[in-house]
Length: 142
Image (tube, rainbow, N blue to C red):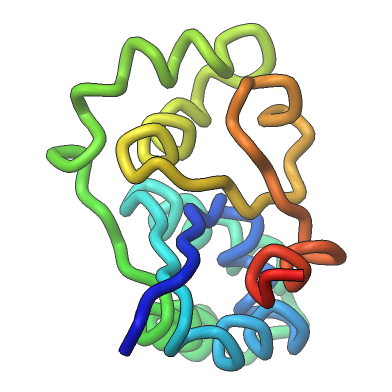
């Protein structure tokens, strides 16, 4: 397998992968030619928010969290030990917008790759970002 591209996924992309088809389809389509990473804190954030988002429409928390766990087949969880040395720089990049997103910024800096997000808090951070409606341009090399 040749890895041509890499992206760090924000928690909102993990949530979209669980709730929708488009993000999950993109992950499956490019899994063999791209590397998808996300800080473990993003998986934790998604696990916290998904039951609230699904609410009464879900059949309980377990099934939706099982789907999130299945996303790990396509997205590698990265531990802070990988990106921790970029904490200060990551915090500086997002401090004026959402300081809680520093792990995503730091992971992108450590892995030297863009962020896949729908969160405008990363825009203007100096780190390339891709939104779902455009990410296939990056992944396909167009």
